[in-house]
Every structure is written in structure tokens, then in C-alpha cells.
Length: 340
Ligand code: NAD
Ligand code: AKB
Image 1 (cartoon, rainbow, N blue to C red):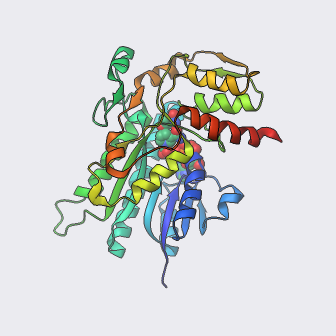
Image 2: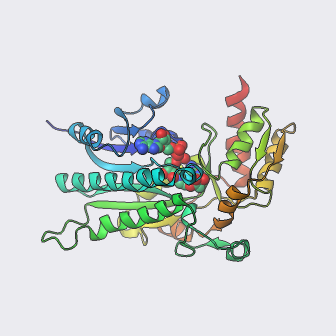
């Protein structure tokens, strides 16, 4: 039985999945197959060939996917995010590390079986950084990929390790075997900043204060921001994240100088986000109720990232800076979303 070569997206029902399904469905003719604990929203389900509901750790589920589809691209999004992971670190390790290992093995076997390298896209995070003090964070400014790789969270440690796992599978897998087995996976990884979407609301992350603030204001709900007004990390509008993935995975491999790339767009403080939200929604009831422990995590993440390599190698060029992200994308779309 011939199986069409397909795209597999894990964690497809989440925030990035929403955007990525749209972007891939528009740009690629390959059938899309998804795997998530939760079913897809109906408008997304229409865009995919088949959805599998279940756990990325379930081997028999991956076998069912292979039985029906020849997978030559994997976008492995499923994960527990930073705040959730800190409450259940052992579970986070199982999902974020063992789950990723399962998907890498899956991709390796697919690559061995059909003889072409399987593209494996992995979304890492600014959580992979761990800056020791606020003074060091301020002094560091835009952080390069190879600086401060000492995460303090389970999630950040999981991400950093999985970056290395991907590099291992792509270049060194079973290096003592008689036959060369590496090179069956084309592993590519972006370290994303906090993402802000107009169509979904995050849960379980630590960068969630910025998207939560704007979604709450648009719904006329009060919002207690859990970080200080001067807390600063990089953010990006969701359409730019999906566009970056597409640009990156379609870039000829010869142009890439790294496996793992930073990407940035804008890096406002929480107070600057609040000011923009208040301008759009003057009645917004935002106050600061500091959660010192979540703030402590944000303090270890960079104030901004150096994304020069992504810009030079594969043309990362976000459409939305701070003003445009809010003025042209988030505020108009979120207003419409909650208008009815
Ligand atoms: P999300 O929480 O919205 O989505 C994650 C999805 O994974 C959910 O639909 C969830 O049901 C699914 N999932 C979790 N555990 C699973 C399991 N065991 N088996 C199958 N599915 C499972 O997250 P997101 O914002 O869409 O993030 C997607 C990826 O991008 C994650 O790996 C995340 O770490 C990374 N990332 C996100 C951001 C951000 O700001 N959103 C920033 C950096 C990196
Ligand atoms: C989180 O806060 O955990 C994510 C991320 C920045 O990786 N949004």
C-alpha cells in the first residue's frame, strides 16, 4: 500500500499549533497529520488529513501513525510549559524529554525506512537561558545563543537537553555501529521568545502575563500582573513565529551555520505592555500582584536576544515590532474576537 509523504505535528491543539496548521496548510501540499492529548478545534480539523488523540509517550500510537502515513517532516510542539513544569517536574521530564526522545526515534526510523532525511523542527525557548543575577541580565543586553546556557527551571533544562539530543541524532546517532546511521534526521531548532496570539490564550507558561493582560482588558476583566512593571523579556506576535518556522525549515541546509537559533522581534517591559493596553482599553483594570517566585524565573531569562544568525542565515525578519504587533495585529483582532 503506498502511503503519501506527510507532515506530523505534535501538540497541534496548542497555541503555536493553531497558527502552524494554517501556515503549513497554505504553503505545502503535503497532508498534515496531528497528535495531541486534546482534539483540534473544528476549523483546524478540516485542514488536516487525520488527527490522532493521545499521548506522545504512547508507542502504539506512533506505530498507528506509521502504519497509515510515511512521515517526512515532524514539527514536535507537544510539551509542558515552564510554570506547569515547575509544579510537576518529574512529569515535565517525562513529557518534554522522554516524549521528544520518542519522536526522535520515530523520525530516525522513518528516515532509515524511506531513505530521505526527515525534517525535525523543535521549538526551544528563552527558558534555555539562566542568567544568574538581575545586574548580569541588564549588563548582558541581547544574549547570544551560546551564552548563559544554565537554565534554572525544569522546562529550560528539558529544552536545552533536547536541543543536544536533536544535534546528537542528526550528527552522531549510534556512531559506533558498523553502518552509518546518522544523517537520517535534519534537526532544526528555534529558541522562541514569549509568543502573543490574538486567537488563543496561553496557559502554563511564565511569559503569559503579556498575552493575559491584553486578553483580559479586551474582555473588560480585571487583571493582576504577577511580575513587576520593569520585568523585561523578548516577545513576538504569533504570525511572525509561524512565518519564522516556515522560512527556517525551507532554507537550504547549506546556508545554516547553527542547529539552534534565537529569534526576536520586540522586548518590552511589563509596564510598557500595560501602557499600550491602557491606551487601547482606557478602562482596563490592571494592577500588579507580584508572585516573587514566577518573577524569579523571568529574571533569569534574557531581556532580549541576539538573533543576528537567524537574520543572516535564513532571513528572519519579523513583520511586527512592538507598535505594529499591538496596533495592527493584536488589538484589532482581539477587539473583534470579544466584540460579540
Ligand atoms: P501549548 O501549551 O499551547 O500547547 C502544547 C500542546 O501540547 C497542547 O495542545 C497539549 O495538549 C499538548 N500536549 C502536552 N502534553 C502532551 C502529551 N503528553 N502528548 C500529546 N500532546 C501533549 O503550547 P504552545 O505555546 O503551543 O507551545 C508549543 C511548543 O512551543 C512547546 O514545545 C513550547 O515549549 C514551545 N514554546 C512556546 C512558547 C510560547 O510562548 N508559546 C515560547 C517558546 C517555546
Ligand atoms: C513559557 O513561558 O513557558 C513559554 C516560553 C517562553 O517558553 N511561553
